[in-house]
Amino acid sequence: NAGVTQTPKFQVLKTGQSMTLQCAQDMNHEYMSWYRQDPGMGLRLIHYSVGAGITDQGEVPNGYNVSRSTTEDFPLRLLSAAPSQTSVYFCASSYLPGLAGGFFFGPGTRLTVL
Amino acid sequence: GQQLNQSPQSMFIQEGEDVSMNCTSSSIFNTWLWYKQDPGEGPVLLIALYKAGELTSNGRLTAQFGITRKDSFLNISASIPSDVGIYFCAGQLDVFGNEKLTFGTGTRLTIIP
Image 1 (cartoon, each protein chain N blue to C red):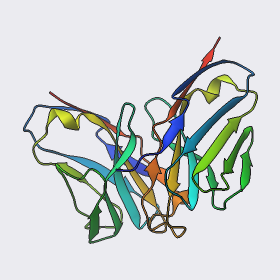
Image 2 (image 1 turned 90 degrees about the vertical axis):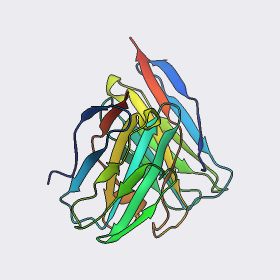
Image 3 (image 1 turned 120 degrees about the horizontal axis):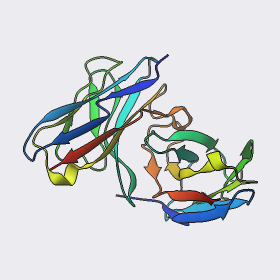
């Protein structure tokens, strides 16, 4: 199993550009989520999904969209990038919806918005 | 949004020393987790605690779920160079896992040669 994979690993955007951060898992996990990590802030939940076709907002959803058309994939879209979105983004998945012990994190995408 | 208070923010220790860190919350959690993050990587689960008062070990690591359900502690004994990294606590309210994780701000551990 590859676990949770994220692409790209690094990305630089200009303000106003759009892009999609990819996340995939091959563990047949129902629950997937996106976090952002900023210095001194820990990890904050952006969006999550408890299964294909179902998504919901987390703590900091503004400026981000998600969709879940398959169990395996959970892309995160930035519609119009802003410097405040400069951060490291982590995707996580879990077998049971939100089961804490089974959270697996991807390696992260480091995004810089100029 | 809610965040957990994690202390200390950073630690500088010598190899072989023991390490203690803690996490406190203004509200209760039913699950406490401890993660370690290496540079350039995602967090990896170290220990999960599901019951108030529970004491769980994973090798040289020991974590405790506070009796009040508002805190948790992580101890590392006889530190080694590979212990370097950032340690995060996380709390979850719903024991069946339907609530999201709330993360602490992290403790950065550095080992001085």
